[in-house]
Amino acid sequence: ATSNVDGDGQKDADEPESPQESESTISLSSFATASGVDLTLGLNKAYGILFNLKLNPDVSSLSIAGMDLYLDTTSHVHYEVWAKPGLWQTVDDEANPNYMKDFYPVSHGTIQGKGLCTPTSTKTCDFATIPIRDFQKVAMLAANIKRLAVYVTLDSDDLIVKDHPGDGSEEGDLFNDGEDEAMDHSLVQASNPAFRVFYGASVLTYPLQVADPATDFRYNKGFLGRIWYRDSAIV
Image 1 (tube, rainbow, N blue to C red):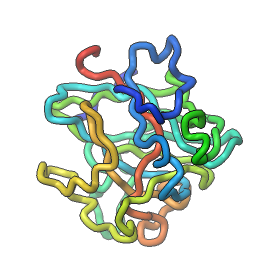
Image 2 (image 1 turned 120 degrees about the vertical axis):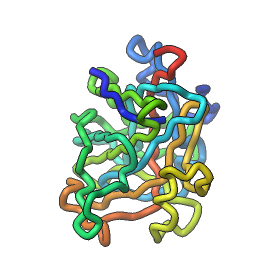
Image 3 (image 1 turned 120 degrees about the horizontal axis):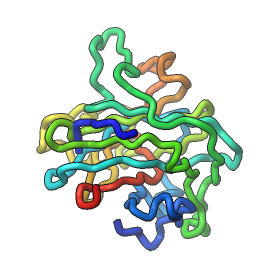
Image 4 (image 1 turned 180 degrees about the vertical axis):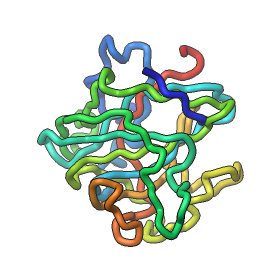
């Protein structure tokens, strides 16, 4: 099934190889938000992470077809992926925010972690694989939905996230990746010709409904993993 959402590779030499490169992903492109030494520096652990994707201006449509996760475990763990149109920061009541509102499930189940990369294993270590067949495709359309909010979580604090190069302790300009095209580009964690991935907030508990933003959110954290997608050229 494909869900329509308003919004907006070549592999790096140091990007980990993916076991998903098979018949199920032959028609897909993949994009890793970090590779090489960046998988060993400036890391933190969390239960989950909230972040936004945005289509690049010259891309008319794109379908998110899968994700692989960076986990600090080699055990089997429960995972969930949720999505919604727009920005994760958008809430109806800022005094009593419900950050789960409008999120719908994209994938859930059990995956096996591959553990942390080390400086000597960055070319052979890998992300934990979510089978493509277990992931509901999410379509981003420039005509009505350029932005996609994503919530990725485990039921344990084994998700590895990336620190912003700044101190990362304050919310800062996190909300500026909305309508302002002259946004602070330091908030773009990673990008390719199709879309941009923005720094978001890690979540230090599970599930999101019980999280207190004042104590359980750590702002300016980045998603580490691989995003599988099909762009408009081959939709």
